[in-house]
Image (cartoon, rainbow, N blue to C red; front, side, top):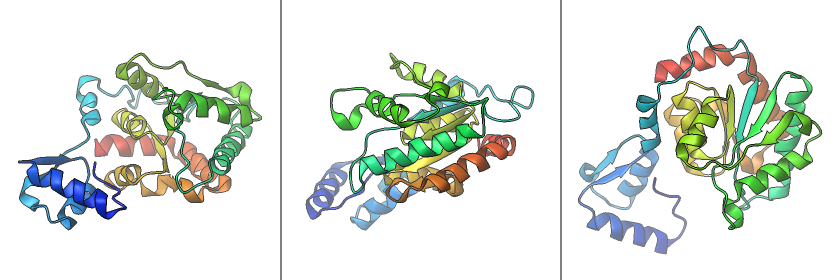
Length: 238
């Protein structure tokens, strides 16, 4: 992916690297547009799917008309720390409150926080933010933080075991789509927004900078009520 590029220096460095490249592969149309705006010739830029989509061929999606649940039970949540242009305390509280609102009306549901990265750097400590949001929840008895995966395939399997995924991590959302699992995107970076636009699920994303618990709860409820048709729609987009 390319961008966002906010500074003249960032644009100049990106253009210099792109100028030296013989061929450039980007994962979405917006990245291609950014390179074109920098003056990179269009013939050397190719839009190809994120490599994570190839896992669908290796591990075919388990959902089908025979085993899809009538309503979601396991809600996967893949978050990351984010404090750029937004108060983290604000959006974290809104997410916790929304999950509580959802669980209040779905006693059978369970929240599975799935960390994708877990390193000492604050922005990459997914386990830390998952535990922090869990601690804010009233219905914490219906949620847990999964152990850190040892490799990518473990996280792929964890996502595949979910019925609905709420994610910030791009690959958590791609893994879900690979398995025909309805997704809700928390948009913190253009790459997540680009994904939802590419797959035609703009109605199921919400910007973290203007996150409102009521709107997120509405999307969660809508996804739950339309779980089966959403899963089939994602399967058809395949």
